[in-house]
Length: 469
Image: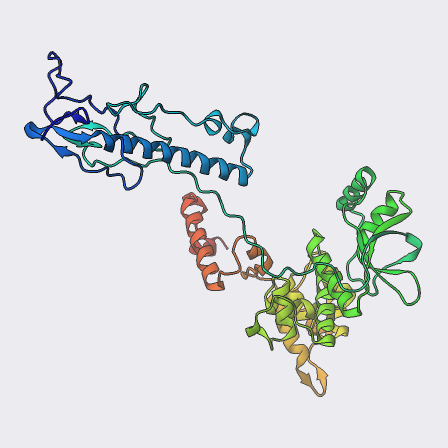
């Protein structure tokens, strides 16, 4: 192949002897730093001359350089556009968020001379994220002849798309605004089941109101008799009065009795840190009655759940089991004295549930016996009393005061049942876990706990205990 000034010779496996001066008429300068085009990573195949030398036409090399510069310029432009669109930090745009010098004035190249090279023609700098192909090993790019693309332009996280049809959050009817209503015009909710206690939480609320005012307005509805009924905000009103404020910020809303009951109970279940058994029982009963009256289904219930009983819907809404809802609602049948023992946690929940089916007269006697003996009946004793109360002998209940005394005076064996409510389990398990899966996890953790205990804390020796007795 004829060699001309239009050609450039790339050294092959056998390096050129550096001691000899090459004949410029026969050998073109070595194309150091030659890189691929940035496209498929493989440049045009070079020609092989006699003696193992690789000959690359100058127009091919110039074309590679031009494509490389164009690719780098395009990458910089895309990065600048992307930064501008996504409000990237200033340091990604240049000083002060302005285009960098390279973006404003791309590097200029001198026109090539007759030899095919510019006056200041130097190997172009490899764009960021691209590794320069090595020269040697008999080919371009080392063993593979391709440029490694390690660092690609980081993908910008996509902004969540808005729904095509957005709903108006404004409630129908009159526009709601916050108004300040005097305490004399505010009235408590009828049969409000939740107590307003003067405890540490209340004192903290009073201090907060004195310092910063209210972060949330109370919810009230107009009364036919005049004034407003508090739906949610009884504790806030008490705190405002204790802080010396004559009025309370409120949102006035038109609501039916059923809507007001549901709003009142849900608000208290959500924001109260402590709810005693009598409060929860009364609130759940109010929810149940409200749903039955208006035949309403809670929003968010799947179509397959339509037709469920009201207590099942209440259970889903309050993240409770349906049986737990039934048991709480049954507590409303307890007499005041027994209910107080339950609120004070002197009577276990399940024993109280069984006793709620006993007639009120016998309940009063049981409460008196608890007060006298200083101990409540066990769950098993409560079940026996409930069964005897339901049985009749000559038309009278078999549960009499003497029978109650006899059962309550029996030696109370330790109740080995441990009841864990669904609310307590929700702290550790998601709603997707079945009771079987939760039980398996609990038992596994108990096995791990038992394995870590010292031998002296193991199971008691029953034979030894029997001999000592």
